[in-house]
Image (cartoon, rainbow, N blue to C red):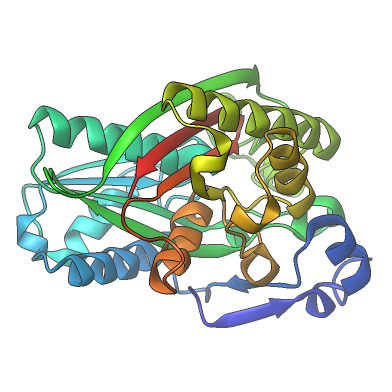
Length: 313
């Protein structure tokens, strides 16, 4: 995580809001912002190094890098290439996945498929974002949400440890609810797009909220059914850290108690594709997630894209 802490009171100095207004609507108290000279790839690289160190794997052993991000360093080369360069892993395959807040679960599904098929021996999947660089600080409805950070996992085949029981990805075909309108070939950069702030995140909050609650609940119930378990057998749900009300409301519909939800958005805000691996890391590091437990990861983001991974840890 970046070192700079930005509180709700800090935001109230640049936009018409308050700590009470933000916390009551989102569950967020503070978030982290990267330095001007700290990029998405820098945070991704730090997370990858940490994950590889914990897994006792040398960077030279990695043959595939997958980076999920909605805020890449460049259009190309992709952010995964910057991570590869930083680790000195010449020859490894590098791809980015751009599905915003569901990017990490997409990346985990792809990485697991590569490893299980034998196409990759060791794959590093990273979720990383510098959303502060593309946040519209004139829009108090969205600027209070977004933040920066990165998390990573290492995947390799194992016969005696955990496995991904099932995954499913999809899209709701709503391109206006959450997007960065300009910067691609549909709306190339121009003086007008810059003046209008079209390179910043645009979000229709109510539509996104309603769809997210419904979809999170559906995913939780579907994952349990496909995994042949009951909601009671789920030990932990690690959702995208979008909004506390979305998460709690959705899990109530799926009969998952709040005590089983891993949430850290009060301290970190919405870090998009990085939010799941950051929360996952915390829950593993503090001992909540234990071997043999069923853990459900769920993401929902731009597109509107969605997806889940049910894991036997």
